[in-house]
Image 1 (cartoon, rainbow, N blue to C red):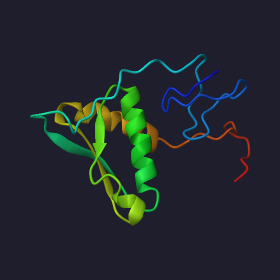
Image 2: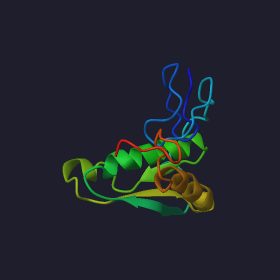
Image 3: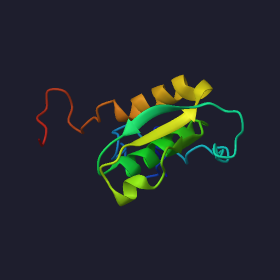
Image 4: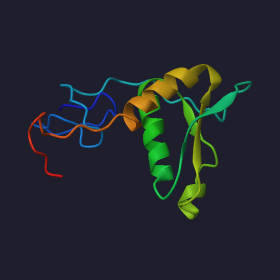
Length: 128
């Protein structure tokens, strides 16, 4: 089954682009990832915010970002985990180790800040 190299989501055969981010799918299964590191258990590590998610989807977006970072081998931890579920307008900062900040920032920018492509080719009308 094809999978998205950005989100690591698998799709049924015949699908060519990721429904979430628009990236072209790759054949096969997503690469195996290392077991997640629990940053709450690490000692003497400086955690810094890599991104802050806001609004009603803050927790969902933070969870998606954690999955993206995990596929890159970057452990992360939402600050105040669970608060957005009770009051959905809270912000959810996502924390990473200071040494992972640049790599994590690039990985999340690639997903969250890159416009999704539509199926229309240049010059063709879209369904908008």
